[in-house]
Image 1 (cartoon, rainbow, N blue to C red):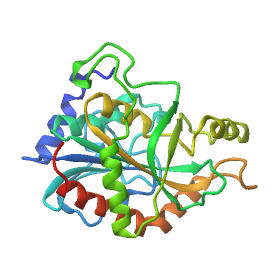
Image 2: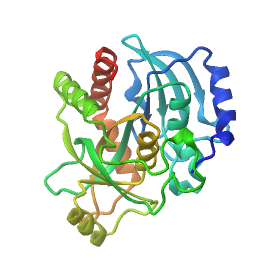
Image 3: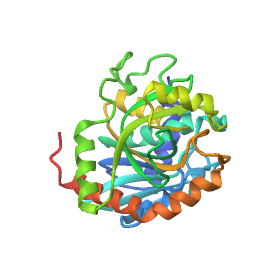
Length: 279
């Protein structure tokens, strides 16, 4: 389990950069999603590299900057990019958005990512609300000595992905005119893409999309008492579905083409989150 004492310098750095910040929620913008935050009033911004224990984003398509923003009168911490387990940097940078959001008093996390589609009838560019997840990373951010900051020693995971926030997300999609699928997200460690045999196994397990992120943040945020909601952009068909190799360039190209609807969904959700009664 992450020792929060080691993360205190990160809190101090962000506190100094964003005096008086009171975010109600945090948002992690994954591969290709960084520009989806356009439309928030910028109150401040800091590079991940200037936050101790976080460090610069190491993957193309991740801006690597924390935006302190406001929309509809409500503040948010918007992480434009994320760190990944496969970078080999340990869990501290990976879960930093959850730590900072909770430490500053946020009550919810909005997680986004890009992933391969496992269902053959889906298409690149589709957006999927995450209803549940499968953790095949072989690691868990809660392993280790217990720290009460992260909640109970054995957290329940029967409703990691908040039904309340998924309802707001569905309403936002309808208002924005954005088609929104629903499905299960499966996370592997990466950085290799999956094999065709693995994709067949994932489909049999009930997965609808496969990626290399998001689940550690969701596990920790849920354990720490934050509501969690998430959206995947299906950027390619997973291995073996189409007769072509998988590349990261395809991921960034698809998210760029889908940016208008990704941004519309994020902004519509922000407006509804601001107007919704606090649970």
